[in-house]
Length: 161
Image (cartoon, rainbow, N blue to C red; front, side, top):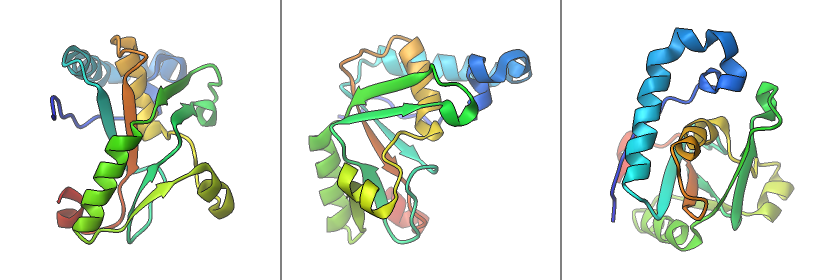
């Protein structure tokens, strides 16, 4: 059952270790993200589903990370000590994938092997890591699962069906 839905800003500069003294320039964004994170955590989700425009994006399909544990860090932004690791909700991921296929939308689950053989990114990207950072800060439980889906370059109607 869907308990909460949010659209989240995700510029890496809103992470204090990255934004540093520029954080004051985006304080309203940070406050809004903290409020959203607190509200989402208060809804006590079993799983948080992320849709990101920064993962493995293709023009003709939707992709999702299929590893049992999903990991990412902010080393691309010069911060190596901020890393997040959450369990993937594989059963929900498969259900989402089957629903997409039933609606004639190609849905590819990216395994470690597929990522390696096709040079795909097997890690969480900043479009997920930034809001996930604030969710963790707001008290997201360690045993909460996540799902990481990358939107494709498909028509909007297809993406939201």
